[in-house]
Image 1 (spheres, rainbow, N blue to C red):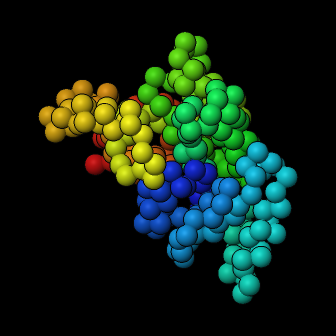
Image 2 (cartoon, rainbow, N blue to C red; image 1 turned 90 degrees about the vertical axis):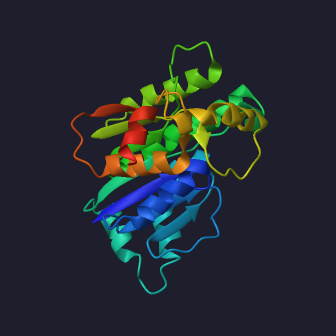
Length: 239
């Protein structure tokens, strides 16, 4: 049995990861974790909600069991508690400093919640952790956004997963729930690079390409314990 855990499923890339997981015949269950449930129904999907900052205290078994009136989710609970399932965790959690309101709140979401989810996933037996980072991620960067992404990458490496995939997409293209003026301008300027197929690592990449590449990587036999996947490599993986 294969189980996918996902956080950030309501975001641009997260929605596409869900879609790819649903399409895949390899995953038996998809357990989505978040502050609130999405208005979506799918046979594989189980959603549990709560304060992500306190995820280590969640009664996740109770949350799943309460939705399993006829016992349909018992194999999911058993697979996680008995450590008999192969578990892959996906995180596309992220925000912007403007949305968060301050650097401190941004760090709490883009670093602390990601690491908290990763630690929780490890206790459930996750062997692989796949994280949507960003091009330019660098713990020593003078740019706070890139520095935060870099620190998150470094802390994920230290958690002891069999495999950590760090995906670094360039400017993301897709239909966001919220309007981001700066990204809209950048997309207009950079989109011709997609048409002309130039500068693979810096040209914009579509949300579904990132998601497809992540799921494909999760299901592969990974040669390394830690892997950084560039935006160009993601485009190749999504073909």
